[in-house]
Length: 218
Image 1 (cartoon, helix red, strand yellow):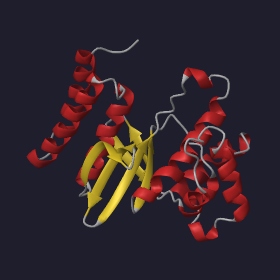
Image 2 (cartoon, rainbow, N blue to C red; image 1 turned 60 degrees about the horizontal axis):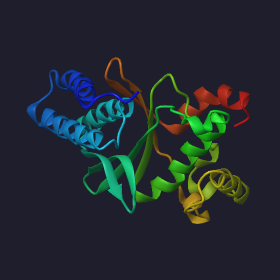
Image 3 (cartoon, rainbow, N blue to C red; image 1 turned 180 degrees about the vertical axis):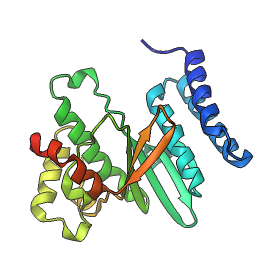
């Protein structure tokens, strides 16, 4: 059941107060600005509470790292979860909660694998760096070829990724060039309960998740 706007505001205010505690006025102003934008989007039924809370926590981490941050940022006909700028460099972060829609109740593993893989392929071209953010209780599934530098990605791996993405995303389909040049740079682990973020590189994440990946033959 959809939460009321009042309940959404109450939860965002709770997490905002936690994030602003002990921080400078400059940092708090930016967090409050993002909170207000998310509330406005919720009133139009465009965002969900779990996702929004994680966006705010990750946004604070990036603000403290020197980034100018926006959420639900529109670019070239799509919307990314977080768009951040520092100097001349840009960063896109896509937040994955592990949610599986009812229409994929019978193929959730495949859905999550395709969803995350396609996000890396489709979004990473719009910024110098691309990152995924996820809670510690959800293991991201994606094609391991995407953590390689593009020049080491083989034609066979590119074809496999293309076939995978085409399972669900054909309007428009991902292109060979997008797959060839896609790159995942960073993974953020978001502990919502504590309101903190831990940063890791994709290779380290993959090594820690390798047993799970091999179990499911990913």
